[in-house]
Image (cartoon, rainbow, N blue to C red; front, side):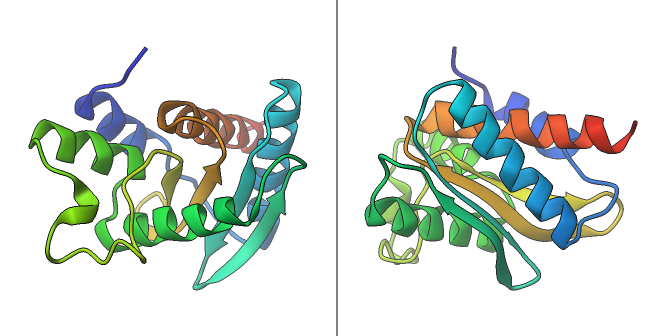
Length: 156
């Protein structure tokens, strides 16, 4: 099942945290690791906030390329304020490739699913949570499911 731009925009609006700090970053990273393990998939995970990597883990079965993919996806989210999957679908609808546009340095940015903005409700963008290792939609879904779970746990 694919997502529409409107559905992704709704996710971006709904999945905003009430607060974000190093402990929440750790919780989010560990939640992603547990979800990936329960699905028996191998991904690299990064939680980035306040200008630094707060959590990073590369599961067995991943490689150094996944770290570069995460960096490029994260850079795109931080630059445009949209999930990397949104950027991918948006550009596909425009019948163009994100990475080949003249203002995009493909060594620094990419539009493949798996990176999602970390926003504090009422404040704005403070970072990005990113995974790499699965097809774009699956990377995206893993991240959004983990964010939703962390939000639900923080409301208890």
